[in-house]
Length: 162
Ligand code: ADP
Image 1: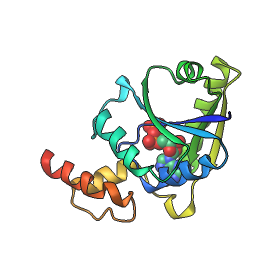
Image 2: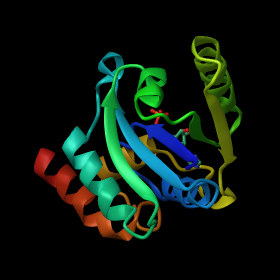
Image 3: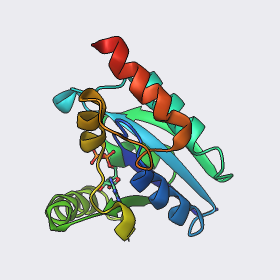
Image 4: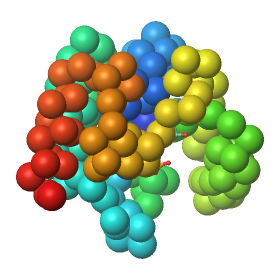
């Protein structure tokens, strides 16, 4: 079975991520959407539990998607899951440099791992989790930018935190 891991912070998941998952799901038999915790950049707005629950809700329509989490090195996680493919989304040039370095480093650590890039949908090329966090905090309109089923959760979360 051909499986791939789609790793990310997903803080929170956006329609840009969902678009990548949907397209990856037709290329692989199963995709693992894996939220990772990075203690070096742990300034997440949503807890791991909240991110997992939003992802589960928002990917219900993708039958071959499974939501998981991990902490530590991605290459170790891929080995543990016996999954040699990593799917990442690419937006602008700014993503490219970071993703290029990351893919080469992973390859250097384990030459069996292959990073597959899916180009952003032009509709979502401007969209990032950080822009959603910013919009939500300042009461901006996030409709059409995040899955409809989690829109209220994001808004309520911000109100509770105020
Ligand atoms: P990370 O902290 O690993 O960058 P993110 O949750 O921000 O995690 O992103 C996960 C993946 O989704 C990354 O490969 C990122 O480039 C990609 N991505 C994020 N937003 C979009 C978008 N609008 N279109 C396509 N890919 C995206």
